[in-house]
Length: 248
Ligand code: PXP
Image 1 (cartoon, helix red, strand yellow):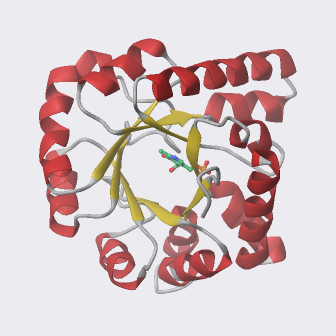
Image 2 (cartoon, rainbow, N blue to C red; image 1 turned 120 degrees about the vertical axis):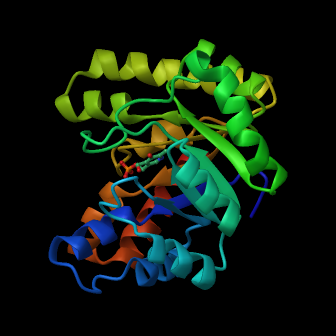
């Protein structure tokens, strides 16, 4: 991988969503992760939610065993999740806000409001060798707080940008994109590694992929949906191609 190349983390949560709709063993998220890896994913992302609605504890065990690329373990900042992360010591841990009633991670973490608690929370994870990332909105206050608590990475929430695009609200979309651009540069200037994700599709990925400060995109729901029509390998390969094209 060249210095300029953008990493693609493929989120396999929704393979588990389909499996869990019936119970049983298929489709298998570990098989999906291995296929994504072969298709060009640089990492696999999985969110162990508190209600285990998609990924399960056994999936995390299986991913840790099967993967040769890094696992990015998304989790809420709870004691239970910290214990699981410390047992597995994945390459990366991404701290996300989590509400039981939400369908997906709706917004970024309020780091500024919980600075003290989060600083203590992530310290043992860092000591265990995990790269700690904080999932936040493109907001200066949150970026500065993430920096102060000792996070090495921030992941910027691209959900609002993608939603505005899908609704055809292009002025709002462009305003969100501009905020993402400015805040990527700002976070980078503080020494933070910048990732981005949530809601990205073939239509929305390229403007974000073109930001030179962004080092990784984490993409799931769209890719798993696209895999129904064209298969997971071509779906991931096309995302990879678009990212590389945008990066020039
Ligand atoms: N990044 C983070 C931190 C997330 O919480 C999610 C959703 O689990 C994603 C990326 C991937 O979002 P999507 O599935 O919408 O592509």
